[in-house]
Image 1 (cartoon, one colour):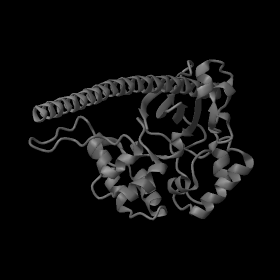
Image 2: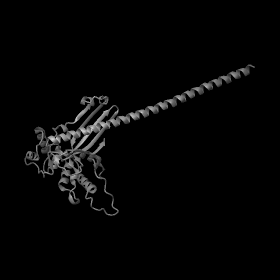
Image 3: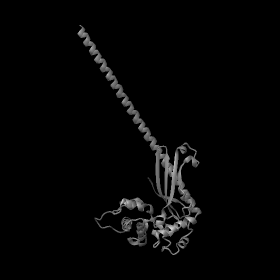
Image 4: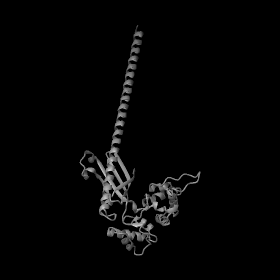
Length: 320
């Protein structure tokens, strides 16, 4: 009898141990399932929060863009020139919105920074396109001089001119059957890296000094760098261009092109009035908004109208 009793006790112990293990397994499995559900719910909520934050930062950036357009409209109404000493050119360091007069809860958690750059302080690659489907030689020479000033081969300018002509040349010219389609036009200065024969380093050097606008534009001598001024004016050395920039800083701005020409003192050979100016219509607006975990940056190209409405039109806008 005792062996049977012992066997029964052993069997019961084994059954009891198996039941405990099964209970632990079920409890563990349930915990994992519940934890997974809670985690998925947390991820979903955090994703929704992030989307809301990004949406709010975009709205704030649109407001900042409207604010910059208002500044440029007011500047056009009160000034006949555009210079780096004017309010639009000062920029806004990162500042909390509640320090700018906003009183909402959002304002205490959000900060904004921004700047406006004169796009006509750069060489406009659109100027390379002359009439009747040919490259405009004076602007090609200016781009060559800029390339040399930056330590790049002159051929870089020729490659850019060829690409501009190929992509934006005379639209009435029919392409032969079977020929390759026109390449995509250059849109941003960084697109120079996509031109065969121009490497990324060369494109990066040129990018801060060139722009692609929708019409021919003169260079604003009140905002242009010494490199751009030296490239734009044949025979003007970079040392003389830097001297002109230093003089501009001392007097704040050139009131008209005639004043700038007088400051040249027979240095260089400035072109016609279609090549130099003291005012601008095109501006690059950049902004950044931080809101809790979200950060959004934006860049826009705007154009001021010459009409009495003084409208400032957004030509394109992109997130950085």
